[in-house]
Image (cartoon, rainbow, N blue to C red):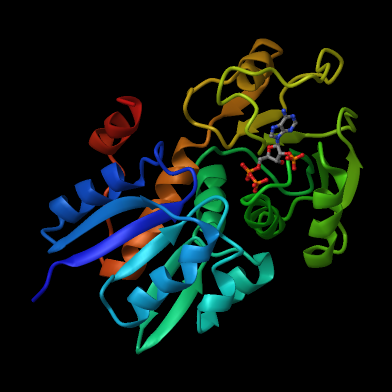
Length: 266
Ligand code: ATR
């Protein structure tokens, strides 16, 4: 049998750590497959996905900025992919291309592992990019009280109200009361600061950053120094990868020291 080829598609894609993680799990489970990253332009997506339909390619992960763009090229969406209008994993199932969203379970499981009670809490999300609809759906499953989104380009936050009617939207730069604050912007990837004054917010909140490299952004450092719990996006990344692996290979991969080390090396 031909070796099965999997990819993560995105643009940019250079920094994706998915190949490292997926290839390690492929090796551990003695699967005859290989996983690579590929940078595509929007006009190449249709052809690429056609290659999954004709099984030249076994399946793929989808990252920024294509999580929504791939949707018309799939045959079916899971309910969660439909609800978030976001697909990060494509699976070939019984002749059909199925769009899944494992970011939701990724975030959900990462938060569950923290032992921070989310029920009835107020959440502020900074950013309105590709992953935010998944985070919102997971937060709803975690039974938070309300969710407010603040994004530099306000219209992108307003657009999320089409999917989630009860979302609050505030101006970029304002700081409403919160119990949990989530940085889902790219600010911090290159040590940029987020211009918000947290000095009066009190303690024992949760500061969560989707970014995991660097492992402590300025945002998390500030949160920690002010006496709050902090967490970066590493577990979310690993859990979404784990869920995709299970969908393709029907095997449970291990999230262990070795996998954490793979991510630290970069
Ligand atoms: P995309 O927006 O293409 O989905 P993303 O990486 O998922 O890409 O999202 C980047 C997020 O970081 C966006 O919310 C973006 O805000 P805009 O919608 O206004 O672009 C936010 N972001 C990036 N650079 C920023 C900056 N300098 N200040 C504030 N927000 C920024």
